[in-house]
Image (cartoon, rainbow, N blue to C red; front, side):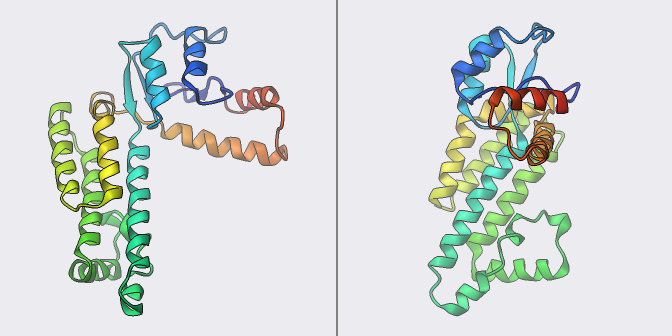
Length: 229
């Protein structure tokens, strides 16, 4: 649990269950005032959204943009691996080798060699090239100054384009976007992310390495609050 404005860890909970989070939100530790809570950033774990709405029905939940993009990147990995596995012969398999990071590169980071490979991919595997275009379009969408209404329309169009590829993994991702559409579009209301949390997770991993593991949860919790609070 973090305060994104103060950029500190408020607490560490024992699990990710809705009941645990609801109990914490209703009775936070002394010194933590949630009476002015206006919005909360979470990943795409449904229990988090449900818990916030159960205690604070008027608080806006914002789906973290980096987790949304990460979910798409996981889908791209699955589709790429399937394409490589089902390649007709070794030559086709060789063409697909080394695409893992290329398909996740943003356009402004492409080298000339990358651009040539993508141009070739557009001829040899147009669906994979369209998948890269879709990922780039989602990245660009988050970078726009669109209003929430404009963002929703653009996201609907993105989903329609993605559905046309007929890829089961991508369709599942589209289902996730639809299920979380309000929270995803809320980014264009509040412009917050939980990227700070990922930084704290890295810091906590360092703490665990220094301590050679912390088997007692309460000791672990207190160390994290002292180290990151």
